[in-house]
Amino acid sequence: MARLRIGSRGSQLALWQANHISALLRERGHEVELEIIKTTGDKILDVALAQVGIKGMFTKEIEDALAEGRVDLAVHSLKDLPTELPPGFELVAITERVNPHDVFLSVNYDCLDALPKDAKVGTSSLRRQAQLKAFRPDLVVHPLRGNVDTRVRKLEEGEYDGIILAAAGLTRLGKTQLVKEYLSEDFMCPAAGQGALGIEIREGDVAMRKHLAFLNNADARAATICERTLLNKLGGGCQVPIGAFAQMKNGKLLLTGVVARPDGSEVLREQQSGTDPVALGELVGDTLLKRGANKILDDVYGATAAAPQQP
Image 1 (cartoon, helix red, strand yellow):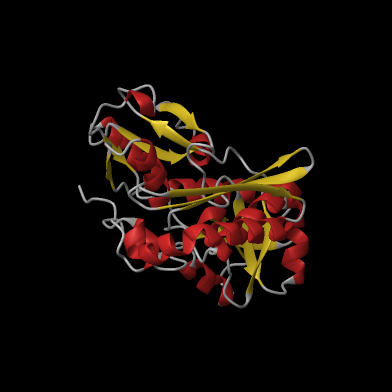
Image 2 (tube, rainbow, N blue to C red):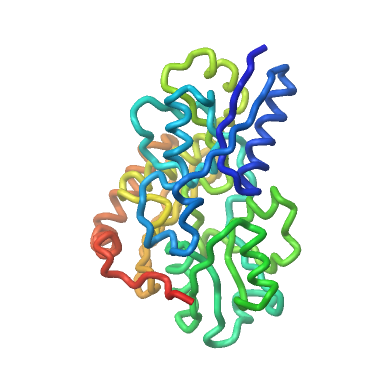
């Protein structure tokens, strides 16, 4: 069997993900090495993600290592991977998806509804902020950066009345103790690809493609490709107020797409079904654009929208 070198970020969650894939590869008889690579997104911790605005901020340095032959494959949280890969790379597998929803965590409150007026909620995601403010414009949203442990610790120390994180990361790390509410896609539409891992290799690496094919999950790939097509149609990345969630229902994909102003004053939601993931993503994206999503996104990209308030 082959000797495979995996490139990964060094956060606790990224290492869990890389070690999870390593274990699956070792079960197949491969020898596996792990190289930890610090990305731009890991170095900038004092600024809200939406204000950084760097494409591939969690992936570029790992792709550089792939291109140089220092690693053979990269394990990413799929939601961090740009919808269009740079030339020379391919997405060889999308793993089975765990819970793709967002969750509300709190020490003192049992659900978002229970938060008092002007309660302080932590998130650095414009997507989460926008949908939260549409529901509760009175809430005060503050940026929340750092790894899962850091974010949960800040909540426990009383810096926030509640925080919103992805269910997947907390589940993988076994840190669900403070989860009070799982947020439905009808209330808070997840990020495209949330809950799935993307395995990236050098384009045309036939041997690697063969070694890693077993990691690909057909249902997860169909759903996330649909979501990523929508995101790409809207010209968005992981730092913009766009939600995309596809699920299989009655033999068809049902795609929900959301575009919202960061202050929650306007939320466009579109839901349609189809059998072709790419065609469905394009259709919902086109429909949102025709309904005015381009104006919202132009304002966001032009930095005229309100960024998350600094603490």
